[in-house]
Length: 195
Image 1 (cartoon, rainbow, N blue to C red):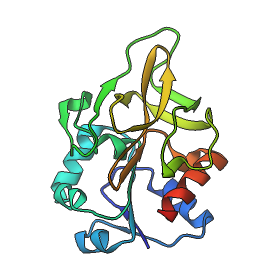
Image 2: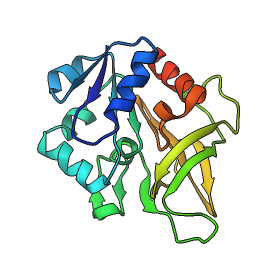
Image 3: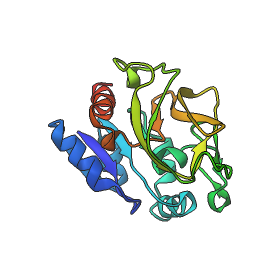
């Protein structure tokens, strides 16, 4: 059973739809016992990183997340809250990944927000097993996680290279939305469900 953490951070319906397409059972919960008892955990998210952190803190979920020993997948803002900090609202984040979340610079050749399909490279993880280098995935974001030792896939938007995916111990994160990334995203979710 997969637990999807419910903390009012959006994109939950698209995640549940993706799991249903894969025939995977799930529960949507903010109950620490349910989250810690699950086989794996998804931390979804869209919107503002500082607001997402405030919501996790108000529900008492920060320490719960830190204590999870099963596979965890953070998606978009769900990845960002697992980083050290974010320029968005000067948020102090959970600090699982050794990455900082920064805003894309103004660049006439690379619009902000970064919306749409982009290719990922330098892929090295069980999460990305079976994917070809240069696979295209779907992004919607104005802030990005910096490159760091936890980076398992990279992407470029304009002149900025950033972490498209991260891994530290049992924690994984994708800045892109696998649930909106067609067959490539479906394969990533299958890989996560198999961890």
